[in-house]
Image (cartoon, rainbow, N blue to C red; front, side, top):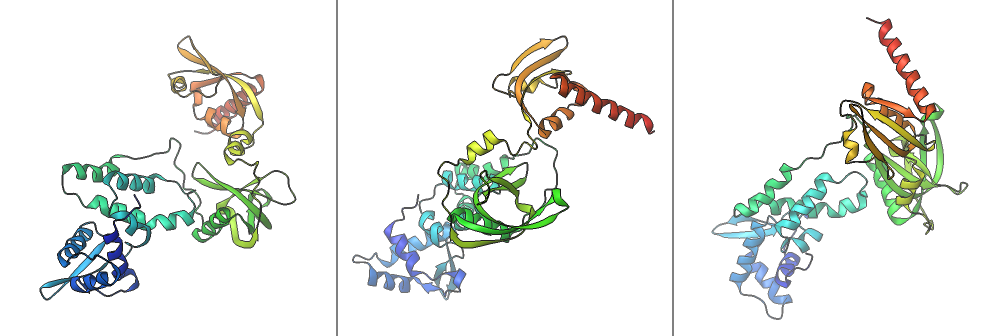
Amino acid sequence: MFNMPPLVAKIFHVLKDAEKGGRFMSTPEVHRELCQSLPHPPVVKTVQRTLQRLQDEQLVESEKRGTALVWRKRAGAGGVAARSASLMTHEQALALQTLKRFSSRQIPSLVAESLSSLFDTAEKRLGVSHNDSERRYRKWVDKVEVESGGFALQHPSIDSTLFSVVTRALFYEQKLDVVYRVRSRANQETARILNPLGLVEVGGLVYLVAAMAAYEKPAVYRLDRLVSANMLPEVFSYPPEFSLADFVKEQRQFDFMVEGPIPVELHFLNGAGNHLLESPLSDDQVAWPAGTGLNIRGTVLLSKRLRWWLRAFGPNVEVLGPAELRDEMAAEARALAAMYAEKP
C-alpha cells in the first residue's frame, strides 16, 4: 500500500505544496525538474498523463494559464497520503474510512494526527467513482451505524489539549505531572506524578490507568477530571509484567465497587432474559424453562453495575439467590412501591 511508483514519487517531490502556499508549476517545468534528477526521464506527455491521473485522485490541483494547465500538490496530499494514494484501492480506502468513523476516543492522538492525511486521501479516493462497482464502496460507509445498547447520556467532555498530553506521555513512556479533581472528596484537587500505563473507554468515559511510585497497584483516573497535565522529560520503565487487558478483565476496576464473585440465580418473565441464551452472563451459565418464564444461574461479580442491570428489568426479573442480594432488591422494591403510593 505504501510503495509508490518512482515517477509519481518524483513528481510529488518536485511539485510545490498548496498547504505551504506553494506556487503552481507548468508541465514543461515539472518535466525539466525531472530531467535533472532522473537518469531516464519520461517524455512530457507521460508527465502530463500522470499529473492528470493524480488530479483525478484528488491529490493534485490545477489552474488554467492561457491554453495550458499548471499544477501543485493539493493541501493535505503530502506525507503518508502521497506515498499511499497512487496504489490505494477502494477496499483500502473503505477500511480507513470505516476505522475513522467507528474508532473510539482511545486511539492515541499522536497516531490520529499522523493518519489524518491518510484519512483525507481515503475520503477523496472514495469520492472518485468511475463505475457502479466503485460507487458501491462510497455508499457502504453510509449503510453502517453503531449504537450503544444503553441509555444515551451526555458524557463529560475531555479537553483535547490534555488528552493529547496524556496520550503522548503514554506513547513515549514519560511521567505525567497532573492535577486531578477527586469527586469523592468534595471535588478536592490534588497534584500527582503518574506513570501512564494505558487508556480504557467504558460507556463513553475515558480512564487513564497509571501507577504512582508510592503505591504497588495501578489506579484509575477519569480523564474529564484532569485539571491540568504536563509531560515530564523523565522516562519511566514500563513494567514488563503489566498487561492492560489482564488488568481490565481480572481486576474489574470498571465494574464500579466490585465486591467479589457470587453465584446468582434469576427468574425472568415476559421474555426479558431470552437474550442471555445467546449472550450468556457467565462462562458457567445454566438456563432452563420455569413455568412461563426462564431461570438463569451463573457466577457473576457483585457490583453496582450488576445492580443497575437488574433494576433495568423492573418487574420482569426476580432474584432467587443469593439471599443477601434478594433481600436487598426486595427492600428497594418496597421502597419504590411506597414512593409511588405516597404521591398521586
